[in-house]
Figure 1 (tube, rainbow, N blue to C red):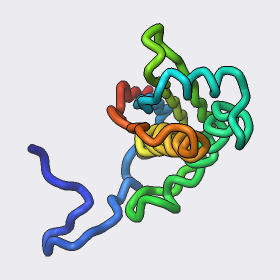
Figure 2: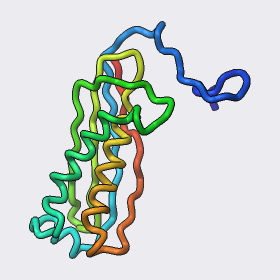
Figure 3: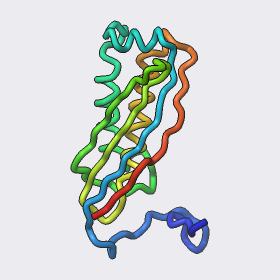
Length: 150
């Protein structure tokens, strides 16, 4: 296992100094899913959820969360992301919504925390908007699927 970069020699938390790194185009993609009942999927697709358009709200919440990641994660660098995107897919099994988020930036540090935060908050928004009709929802599998820099 590599050295923990957010811990100093005395074991204290610290923000990593990235000032010597070159600015690069960076992109991160994260995914996760929320498992729901088929009836809940039907409600989401029909637009009949009591709180409104579930996926539209979740998309906006995910994008907004990506932009606010440094406010949520204490040692995360505040980044002016240049692109954030959140997408949804309902597989043929109709037992979950798969969430994918992409974040891009030109910076000295990566943007994977922003992509992960977007997926997490999008899933939490779906949960919040459907909790009255589905008590068995489960958010799972949130992970980074790719990171690139040029």
